[in-house]
Length: 86
Image (cartoon, rainbow, N blue to C red; front, side):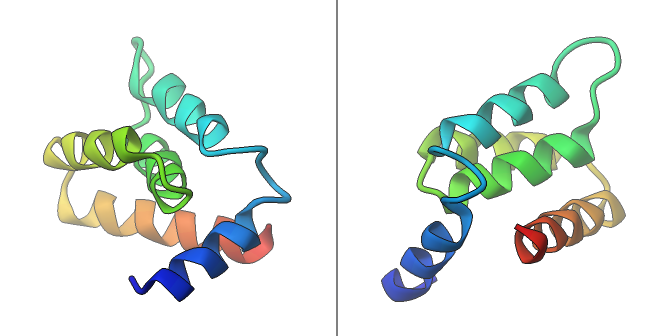
């Protein structure tokens, strides 16, 4: 992603979150515990990574290793859908 596109994404997401820590925390909540939701975790880590959280990008890759291609596609769609609404 170009730096201009990255800046545009960050600017678009700023009203929804104060910083990349908010979606990162949501990703952590979704990825742990007995009722872990890896699709949701991937979505939130993806959004946090777009806001510049390097740890979120690493965890997104880790979560993806445990997911099917269909689940990854669903998580990516969910992240895109969320971004277009916020």
